[in-house]
Image 1 (tube, rainbow, N blue to C red):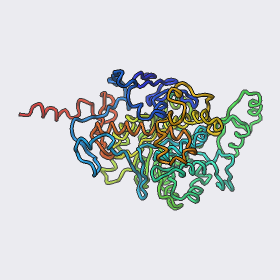
Image 2: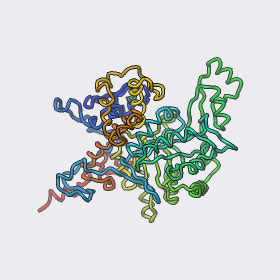
Image 3: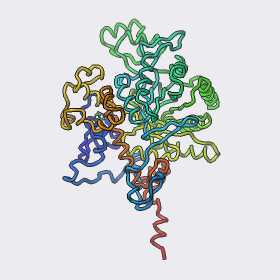
Length: 547
Ligand code: SF4
């Protein structure tokens, strides 16, 4: 297994724990005092793109050999001439062809086009408590930055304050909070997407949402995710809450109604209960049956009034991948998110995360191939978002390029959660009266933060930009986590623009598969992306042999 680097002296970053390919730790904790690249960019924004001690140091890449198959083994193209994708107002003059002039806005959809200021979206943040705790930061941040955020499964089912009558939702305060927080700062870019799993469908989430919010919300059917091939789960440490979840119809393990389990809980031999969701489509045996059921579900959602519908699928094998792409195309869905192994927010059994499913790069490479197959038959493939272990701007460029022209967005699970809790920890120190409300962990600022300053205006590179967007008066209502999100998104945006300028692509829709190459033969074989010295080799020969 490849050991991922934990420390980067050039950027001045270090992982708190073991590192993944994404650059995040295998375990990312909400009290972390730093400082991986994502953590630091929440505070310093685009400055983190560059090596530290600029002007007082030199630095050199340590990443010029690539072993094994993975996104790390794709490299980004650069060209010595040309420029494409320039906005109309720009010319091919060098004064116009500068990286800030690249356009990174994207859009997806069919009847209603959803626009995004940056080509990212969050993973599904559902009933896991970390999502609820930091939601104000996540949703305000996404709305201010202008990218989609996904409300994951089971939010209503586990909400003690929600009211169900005859098994259907009457009141859903937590789901309302999730949607309304985003809509408060929504400014025409991004979207709020609400997922439906088996339990949500039974509880009438789709009916409730369309009645209350209409087409302000995108509804998402859920087949799976990258982290696991069983339904979503959470852990609860209260017997009473475990019984409540059992009564709500969930699978709760161990059974909190079993007297022996209750005795073990009293004796502290058992301290937690795991709540599981059900698997989907268990009663269906053939792909035709799945297709029919899927089309019926989509037709039902359309009849309810939904104009924007998406599908999320996980790291399943090739049959399910083909089904997801073909059915999404036939149903004219607005977006298909394909989450590879290595993805997810991690509320999953550890060895399942480590060993199940098709890793992102090969799954994504196949998705591209299958979209081409549809296109060759005259069928429009769906707009696609790739997910599964992304955190940096180079990941975004590579994923968009690998799936071009079908990939419109890159979905990130864990990375955009870091600004939420980092900002909240800082807010809890600077505004102690808000510490409990924002779930801050810290008593004082760690040196990793205090070295940047004492006041939020000094600590957050994104402060002034957010102030400009929401207005000075509104800043008192903006969670610090949302400001940290802006810093992180700004770093991704700037880094992506630089990669695009280097590849001479000044708009996202001009990024193509030609803008990456494989750094080893294994990756070439698995992805179909040619090895670096094979690309343009014929052109090189013709130059050399020109008479
Ligand atoms: S924020 Fe998370 S991923 Fe980054 S160093 Fe801390 S624990 Fe690791």
